[in-house]
Amino acid sequence: MTGFRRGEIAGLRWSDIDLVAGTVNICNTRVSVDGEVVEKPTKSKAGTRTLQLPDELLAELKRTRKARAVERLAAGPAYDPACSDCGHEHVVANEVGQPPHPESVSTWWDSMLVRVGLPAIHLHDARHTCGTLLALDGVPMPLISAWLGHADTAFTARTYTHSQPVALAQMAATRTLNVR
Image 1 (cartoon, one colour):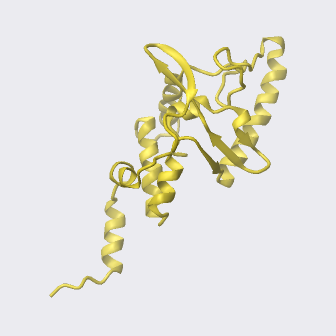
Image 2 (spheres, rainbow, N blue to C red):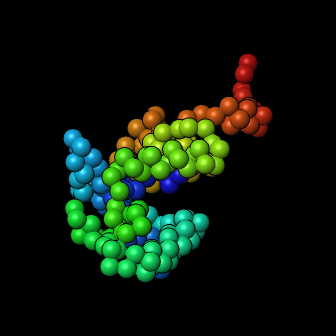
């Protein structure tokens, strides 16, 4: 629900996160191109961004970092966090430290939805949900665009924020329309 692209999630490296400052530098993607996994920079200048992490996400990343240390001890010499594609240690990794195929991130997402009893939605749809929830919370569109890594706020508004019936009803109940 961070609004990050699947490739940004799969490509996120521990070196991109500052757990003390509470920031994440989105600068790398891990994508599948013709069946081959490719590590590359984000797809645009706007896609490369440094974001302040929400407290809940920062806490989860700290827990994940500690869990990796336990996995490293359990796996012993089999643990190899150096990615064969880029040489970095990825945040999303298996029990021996290796990053997954990007499509596995979507498979894990689907499994998590089933496990917690939520309806099936595509992982990318969570990106739209993030944009919509930020808009419903009154976050200005330029900030939503920057968070999602878009250069064009009109594109963000048109594509990544969606009106909700409850929000429309609340708006109607609290606004006075000048109707003659």
